[in-house]
Image (cartoon, rainbow, N blue to C red; front, side, top):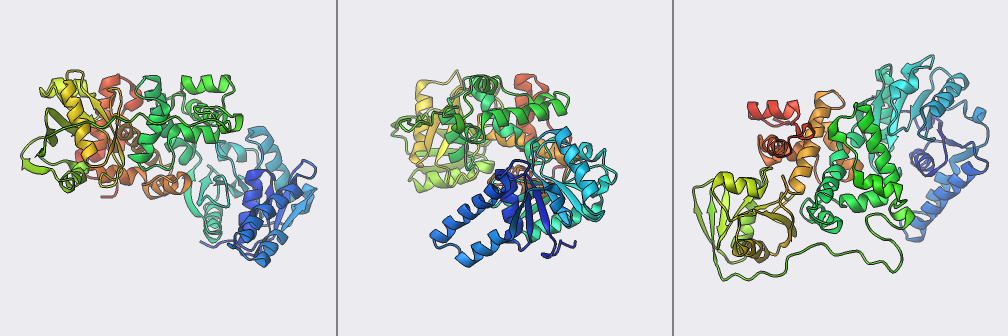
Length: 506
């Protein structure tokens, strides 16, 4: 794949935060960049904003002044669209409106040469639809950056129905030369990231609606057990609920109201109340200067004189927990069994998607406590647990005491299918598997997109493989049985891999 040479002039249309950031990325890579905006003075302000951002790096000793001067000097604000005619690639980063974008692209097609690549930074509009009225739709490609463009590594290179393969490959190679991690995607609703990421928000929103735990507790579980950078509630507060809710509705409607993408009534209420998150000063959390973030629900220290832990069978992904208990000084007794722990009156097992109350009845084990998934059980600082309704108070206390002996904070949440991290990861993997099946992207690009675009600790398909053949399929099947809803139906590839006893990367 041949990238655009640095001698090629790049034009960016739209000088807001995203457009200015894209201009900075191209200029840092050595290109002359035309920056245009229809608002008077906006292009110059965009360039000045880039200069300010880079000057901070000079002030901190992270960049040389002459380097900054050279980058800013390559960004040339232009007031008339006609001034960008000589550009080899034009990237539009204007308002997310189909008709407005179509009008601009048609004007660019008439203005620029037939060899000029037209790229759209759209995050949600069909590239196929954008190109449908062009004379040469084959030269239109999606080049979806993530905000802030200079810092975020991912670029989704989106191919519309008519996009020329060579054009997409040139843009891919160019993004690589610009220091980005590009992935190929087909023009389907949400592309990769905005589609596959929906369950990250949706599952915690549903758990909140069901009263499983409060936002601070759910956020802490996702961070401290799941190893995600931010929890879903603090992240949606950062993104803005108007933006996140709009994207969810867009994907939901684009997929003919498939219940997998069902928007949240709680988030709808926040938007209607004007509680948009950080930008409005109030979302799930308050952001006034004197506001204090609520603490997550954490069980107080539980006392237990028991020193023996019985490990019955293989613990699967949770095997590292046993090492932590051993290091904590407990006597470990290993024997055959279904994969569970016995400590005092408590029986503990990793969630399989069923509620603890349901599983306790089915297995004849009333004192059952289920613990949630962790990204790395050897390092997790918090775990969520659900306790069966049949369990004794002593069993609940013993379950908490055991985890606390390993230095793990315990969040006791209401008994819900799949708890928190497990159901979130299972649904992310499910959506990723469906995206691969439908040819949206390769499994490698899907996993890379979720890591580079959203800083996930691991790609969902790789994570599914690491949990063991069939585990995610089993979890989803059990959750679907609990709710009786199509929302949790396992993807066809998950089902196929389960019966073939293989993973996505087998």
